[in-house]
Image (cartoon, rainbow, N blue to C red):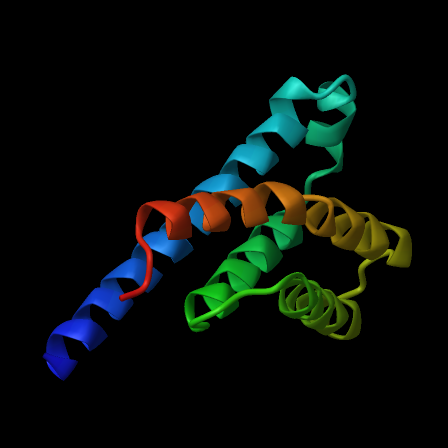
Length: 121
């Protein structure tokens, strides 16, 4: 029975992380194609931003629970890494952080919806 609970939790976590990834991808797509500044936004996106977003997602995958505070901390840690490691304009870093943090509400909605459909036993 304990093994089955762990398996169910792991499966639920994997699905939850997948949902978070879909939410982040959706937000990114909107940023690049759906917003009123889409053309400008596409010009602003740089390769390091894509790598940094991937790193944020990787860090989220390793967590069993995600809160707004934890999410914001991960975003900041990744941004700080890029600020220190690369010659990136501080304005670009802050725009990246602002954009990712702005997606928390949509990510939280996805996580809440998942937990409603898959309650813990």
